[in-house]
Image (cartoon, rainbow, N blue to C red):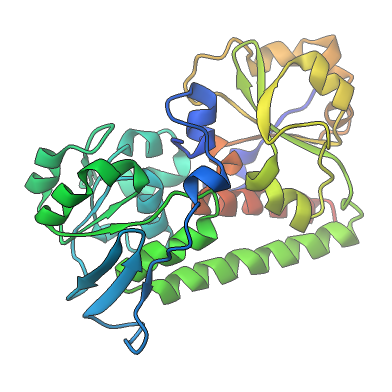
Length: 326
């Protein structure tokens, strides 16, 4: 069996929305209904300059006037720190609730090695936030019970959680006056999608089945549904209709699906009983189509998450794979 290491191709879940929580059960499940169930958006008021301050931000709790571009932001939901990393505004991130979740994933290492970002713990702590002295706080519906107290500390904006990072990155960008940079990130992502889809069409890889999964317990967790829509609906991999949005699957189940491509991540908690070296010795594993055709790729776990940089990284992995198929 040959397992390719996707880490050499590039630089390298609610919590990582379901990637983080779907594996360890540390938070409620993420769905469009319970995370993005609001028509409120964070955007500058009509008639205001989109690149200047002061600006009025419309959000889930009403309106907040931000007088000048924030220099220190307290993030109460770690994916929103990730959004600022993505648009090159990491220097604004003063502290993050759930910072340890970001530390599990290699794509964020460049932003965390300095130790300058304060870990605000596993849940919002008012005393720690006061000590940070932020210019603005970005919260979610999880913080609704303490919203009034947060407002007394400083300007507070509530952005409901969503698996659609292209929606929330614009909202987070607006808070710091960088919605244009957020849109540029989205445009770059979408262009890469288009380019890879064209390559897959040319190399006749479009329509090939693909399974995205992570070692877990004595089997695997697989990921499908909304978070993987880019890989399936837009790139052209064929999904498995019988699979849920995410769930557990054993080796026999993988064998029954017998995908053309397998993207395999190792359990970031390092507690899985299933090990890559054990798979290499398994007769069932070695009979898989993906294994026999050298189409198993070991990747970093964030590729299977719902966040901007993880999904962009996933595209870079697939882009390299498809370019080698030309």
